[in-house]
Image (cartoon, rainbow, N blue to C red; front, side):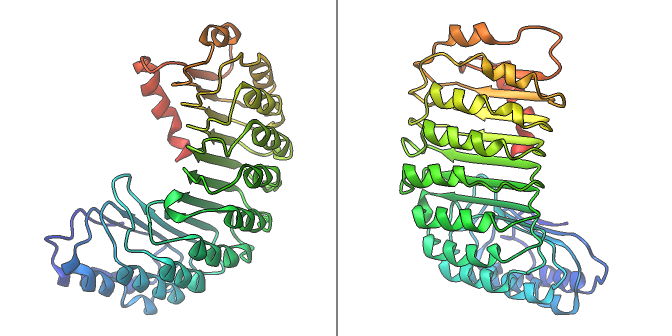
Length: 362
């Protein structure tokens, strides 16, 4: 693991020497590159960091965690060196919560699609803050991913800045359904209003029905009315085929098209997740949830013998009848799983617990 807290004052010669040294480690299995700040003066030195990878053919994890900006020059340098790592199994490009890969464009994503190692088992990409990456670049990337038969773990994060529309989500659906050995799937769409309600419902209808899938996490942030009760109902039907899922997380925060009817449709299918250990349903700030949550929700949970905890977040649902929700809570101390239900913002203790529990989801 190599960490540069700040490259602003870093010695470029040292950075390059570290890169050359890593290139000589023939048995290296894992490599994580981290930086808090990429400065213009150090672009060439960081590019030189990967210059001797040609002599090295390990299986390693490449994780870029950036809290500042990175240019296409460095991204291209790293991508082009992937061809010298034919045994690469895990690849991750991610940003910190305070940074973005603002220098990355469709050109770099297209290059990534060309050099993407075909033997990857894990691929994680966060381009939600990349304003220059549009649906054109994303479509170019999804095509080779669909041809990779060895993938077990996929994590993709998009946002409205990427201009995601129906064509992308349809291609994503086709791509995912080609993955026969997928064990973990995380998909996040942030405020992607160009995706229509019909396309989203179709996407949830044809989720991968892999018998191998163990972890499914879906995040649809601020979808307004493009995610509806019908979509949640279709998702519930799709869940019935996922018998081996141990972790299921659904984030619909800010989706005004979701009501208590959609939650109830989804709830009656949760009992089919026979192996589930961790469940999270978040409907924070879904303003049209105003009726009664069915008691079937907790009846279905009782069917899950391995369940460790269940989290239901209904904060900022201002029209919700909170008294009705409290009536159906399983208050019995003999409950086999940990339960956290959030109805208001003044539950500081529960809020603290929530973040501890949610480590599994991100």
